[in-house]
Image: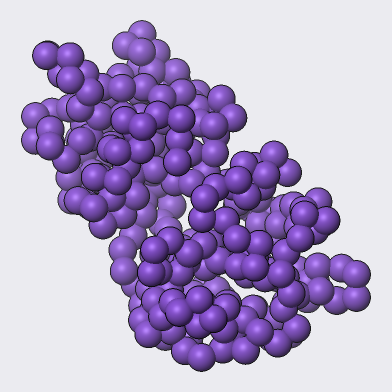
Length: 272
């Protein structure tokens, strides 16, 4: 949820229409922290027909499903890449969630280069798992988790940059449940984690990470089993997750568990 009921309503309707959310959680967290600006697209009658979360180096935007097909997306992209027209940067990154044909056509027409692919994988029904040695997250684990997460995702531009403030913001979301945030410890040190996000009747493996020094020890598979067990405790038998398209090891693990591709998110780079 954001501080704008109108934006929340647009997100709900766009997600229903596109079968994927228009904005990443990271972009929404940055909006809450003032790193991104909410910019509305208006039509000739003053109606809000689209919204963007804009910053100097990145932007995500969506056109209201009720106002598509009238060129609003092209105008928003043009504005976001030209400061003189209201945007805040010329060289920037854009996420196209769902990789829809319209977004591909728009990117091609404006000369955007596809540079990253994020796979959305889904599994239903989920297998029966075991909690094993996994324990629930507590507030005392916060700093250790932030440090481990930074190591796990050192090469990841978004996940690896998560701060304690970002964690606190996410933990304040209505969906957050510390019992869905599973940790595996080696003595007093964190060895890995599986963070679940449950919304309505579906569970997401929101973030999964294993200490780089403890990989290939079966911890990742054990964390997935713990996640499945926790979902079963909550009566959830459907799960999904996002993984980088070039993360062959993680993709192999998820596919071996039965996950299959549901959709694709694509990141584009624009340079004037």
